[in-house]
Amino acid sequence: MGSLTKEQVDGFYKYGFLKVDGVLDGERYLDPIIEEYAGVLDQLADVLYEKGEISSRYEDLPFGDRVTRIYAETGTHFSGHFDFSLPFAGVTEETPFWTGQAVLNALTAAPLLDAVESLIGPEIYSNPVQHVRIKPPEKYLPRNERGEPVIGATEWHQDHGVVTPDADETEMITAWFSLTDASIEQGPLKIVPQSHDSGLLTHCLNYQGQGRRVIPEHLFDIDSTIPMPAKRGDVIFLHKETVHGSLSNVSEKIRWSFDLRYNPIGQATGRGAFPGFVARSKQDPSLELRDADLWTEMWTNARSKMAKINQNGESDVRFGRWQEGHPDCA
Ligand SMILES: O=C(O)CCC(=O)C(=O)O
Ligand SMILES: [Fe+2]
Image 1 (cartoon, protein in one colour):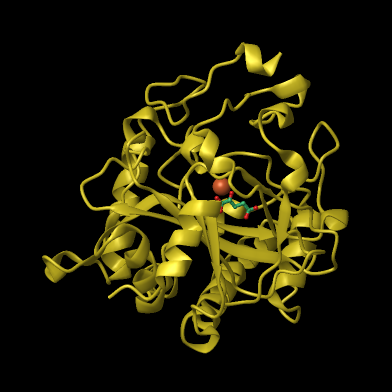
Image 2 (cartoon, rainbow, N blue to C red):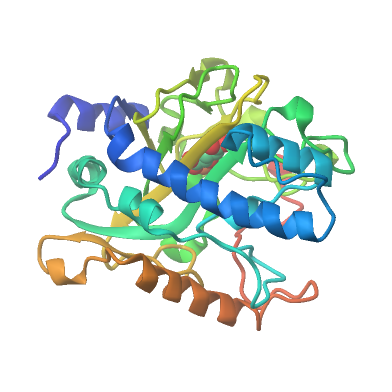
């Protein structure tokens, strides 16, 4: 059964977003994820230490400080080891990803799906456009060739803009939540209320030579931007055409969030090479995925297929929809 009030649902469609406090119980859903990722980091630290890429395993540091230290010392980031997704190109049979049981339990948490059900109905598909984002304090991060932190603020975009056109009619919604409190200093989401009224806006692939995909600021009302700090367990729902990005992490702590997508079963996900699954079905509950081993198998199969395409700069299967040279991007 849906858990949102009519006012909340109406507010979501009117403003293009909805923040619901205390959806996910920290002890039940979030602590197990934190524990699971500690194991992932342990493994990563072992490998890096054995290769001589770090001078210590840093096992006494708490998760956030340990990640930050390892990224700083190696001069690179290891986001792929934690993400329940894959890169779009250059994948091999060894490309890391993480699809653990605690993660799956959060994606299928009843209180989360109850809220999703209020927005898109009881036949709910977990869309594979999904990420964990572990963003260390920017001041400690390695920099790319343009001098920017390797995992910095998220550029202005709409989630509709990151799926392929086959999903143009899909009623996809985004659910964002943080595993630890996300203060303003930690670089939470920033949202432009009612920007979804404008429909899909142009995303420029290399706006003003900055080398990143972004909606140019002249296409939306940037002055009405609001920052969205959140407590752990709160969930922020976004309409697929709501313009959003994130602030920079200028704090001393990591910012650690999940962003998930859901759509009604049977609609295109806009990322057909990656596996989604039935998160809830009132019509046929036997379809619901709850076993992380099966989920891992699905991603392992996807990885094998990806290892045969999109190699060496080729684009056999497209993941994006934008081309350079649009007049909005001049
Ligand atoms: O967490 C972020 O920095 C960006 C998240 C995002 O774009 C999303 O939830 O769709
Ligand atoms: Fe997004």
